[in-house]
Length: 69
Image 1 (cartoon, rainbow, N blue to C red):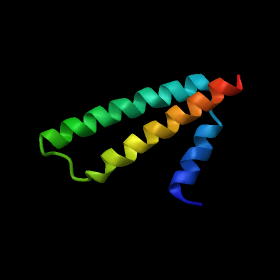
Image 2: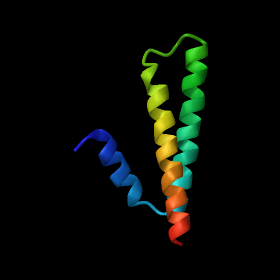
Image 3: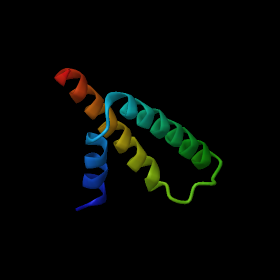
Image 4: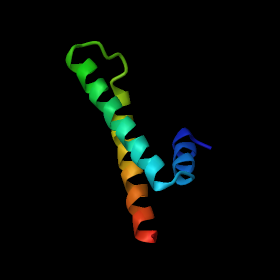
């Protein structure tokens, strides 16, 4: 299985509050990555895109779980 599918499976097993915590952590990471990029300290700029997509995945699951409830 790919890394993305494993991550989505892991997220599916979490409840809404865990997903909210995961979302906050991902947004903090994105902020830090942008800060590092602005100060030319970031080596892997592709990580920004990856984190943004992860944030979207988390938000999608939060919405899905809210509609199911």
